[in-house]
Image (cartoon, rainbow, N blue to C red):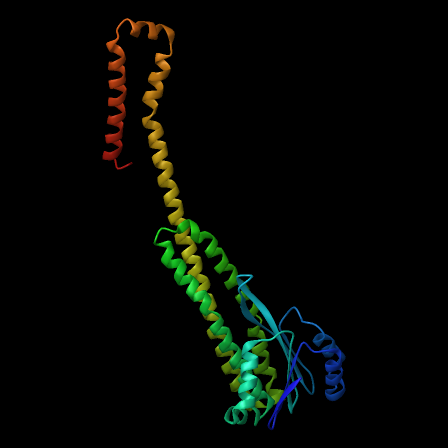
Length: 302
């Protein structure tokens, strides 16, 4: 456990041990259900309003290079009138950076920890939403790379890359979607705990969330459009190949037909009596194939 103190006390726990949970229970008298939920990571983001404290379980998206997609990283928050308590199950860079700024910088500490826990919650959520916005940078770069390569003839290679980006966007979107109802609950019900003056702060948080959500939706539409374009280009290339193969097969039909006719015994015996007839047949066959070739060129089939 580590702490930073001003008018408000911020306690931060990483991977809380049983004695840490016992300390929270004995010191703050949190509901046993709340303590039980803190014992292990939860599967969904939510907010719970109690008479003397608030409990938030929030999942923030973080890009995992090994998985090539965004995964949720949980931060649980317990808020009383005097204490702001964060519980994490693994390190999360923006939380560490914000905590250290509050410790190191007197101006930040004065601004964030010298009013109410509601104000600290606002600044904390603002930092985390800014972090979520920065997490979208890798998606932007990938979309730009995919767009560039699609129009440079790498359509086939981009099929897999587009699938990875689509999964990343969908995972990111799934993680942040519950924020809307949580922030709406804070704006409407939170004022009864923090006071009406805090409502405008939580409305501002909703605006920050919508900024992130709209960006994700924009990237979702962009990658879907690129996927449609890429599929059209791949299909066009396949159709061109199939057209050429079909026309070549059609051009070869006269030669195949002549070969089959010459294999007939009576015709072979007839032609053997006129040696020049073989040359005439070959020239006629070649002439038909050349004629078909120029006919197809004229019709722009080749």
